[in-house]
Amino acid sequence: MTLEQLKTALDQQFDIVGFIKTEQYQQALRALDKPVLSIPFKTMAVVGLSYPKRIIKHTDTHLIPSFYTFGRDYHDVLKNRIKQALDPLGIQYDLGVDNHPHNERLAATLAGLGFMGKNQLIINQDYGSYMFLGLVFLDIDIEKPFVLEVNDSCGDCKICIDACPTNALYEGGYHVSKCMSHYNQTKRVLTDVEIEKNYALFGCDICQMVCPKNVNKGKVVHEEFLLSGKEAVSIIDLFNDSEKTFKEKYADMAYLWKGKTILMRNALMLLSRSHNSKYNDLIEQSIEKYTMPWYQDTAIKVLKKLKG
Ligand code: SF4
Ligand code: SF4
Image (cartoon, rainbow, N blue to C red; front, side, top):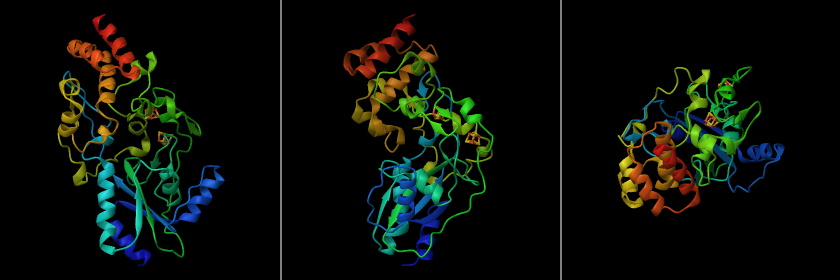
């Protein structure tokens, strides 16, 4: 199997593909003083699939997550595309998309898929930061890496740092626990300020939306990311459906991965922001049913405010 054959196969499924030696990736981890995992494959492919930017607004009855979750769950989409590309070739490989112990962004930088922006995302010249990343570990030995050229950087720009509503970004780094996209996916008691600032049902798009490198990007719509109608989540479904029914109704959506209750907790913050007291009875019932402190704390605070 040659690198050219692998590249041709992956190019048919992905917008952008680079190849690096595993050793090179591990050296980069060592240089950054990061833990180095043993990887039983000599070569890594880093693949990127772009996704579209689409804005949908909350209504009184439906709430909207970050737009990277629109369409089918990208974890499955990328895994399927990797399998479609490589299974016919009959080679040994392993893969990772998002939920794995490897550093995708470092590998993407080494493979030249883009540069690491101050918003902590990989920015590609053609697709901006609207790109899902995946890693493929390949049982081949390549003479030299196939690395794409990157001649760009943030320079003096710090628009995302200034725009971040929670001050999670700073020059040269990122306070992950302050990031809304992190805390609204975390099962912990939230502070009053965190509750007040949260504006999405799941995730946060602000540091991508303000980035000048994303102007006129996010236009390609791969078929898996066509809108399905499940981008807008019904508040009634959230509070009334069982976990099982909700998961069946909203199957294939990336925002499901932390379960329904975390979406309910985030919905509470949005009801509070919009002073929408129509669902107070349902909130009250949910406080009886969901006894986890990270849920009850937000629910009690929000209900008190909505009853005003
Ligand atoms: S995702 Fe939102 S909260 Fe997190 S760094 Fe970006 S702008 Fe800040
Ligand atoms: S907004 Fe500016 S500083 Fe932030 S990632 Fe984009 S180019 Fe870089």
